Image 1 (cartoon, rainbow, N blue to C red):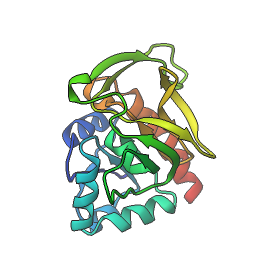
Image 2 (spheres, rainbow, N blue to C red):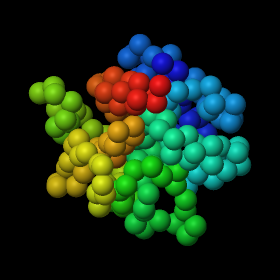
Image 3 (cartoon, rainbow, N blue to C red):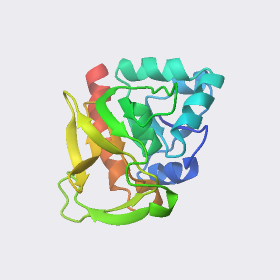
Image 4 (cartoon, rainbow, N blue to C red):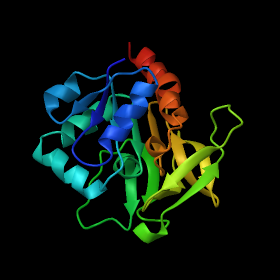
Amino acid sequence: MKVGVLALQGDVREHISALIACGVYPTTVRRPAELAAVEALVIPGGESTTIAHLSQIFDLFQPIRDRIAHGMPVYGSCAGMILLADHILDAKAGQETFGGLDITVRRNAFGRQVDSFESDIAFADATPAPVRAVFIRAPWVEEIGTGIEILAEIDSHPVAVRSKSILATSFHPELTGDHRIHRYFIEEVARGALQHLQ
C-alpha cells in the first residue's frame, strides 16, 4: 500500500515513524504529483489553518478534497480531524477544510496549550488494553452526522471517529509509541476502502 503523509506542517516525522513500525514505508506529500502517486493519506497534527493555507499555496487543497470525495483512505490526527470535518465551531474567519466526515468539531475544545493532557481511553479495535491519548489544543466532535462510527470518547465527547474510508482522532497516537491506531487505519480502514475502489 502506498501511503503518503501530508508534509506541509506539523508532526510529520512522528507519523512516518509510526507507519514504518507498522510495516508501511510512506512518502511525504508536498506536491500534486506526490499526492497522485499515493493510495492513502495521513494528515498530521499541527495548525489546521496553516496546513489549509499551505495546501492552497502548493496547489494541493482541491486535489486532496477531490481524492477524499472519491474514496481515498485518509487518517487525520488533531488538526487533521479539523481538516476532515465538514463543519467547524469556533473557526477562524474564512477557514476551509478538505471535508469528507459528516461531523462538526470544536477547535481547541479541551483548552489552550497549557491545558494539554494525557489520558488512557478505550478504543474500539477489539483489544482490551486502553490507548494512551495525548491531547494538545485538541478538538472534540460536537455533532455526528450520518455514516459516522464513534471509536473512542472522553467525558461523553467523541475523540475518535471513522466513516468507511476516513479515520480521525482528536489526540496524537504518533507521540506515544503505541501504533494500534495507525495499524487500525492501515488494516481496517484503508485496506477495505481500497478493495472497494478496485
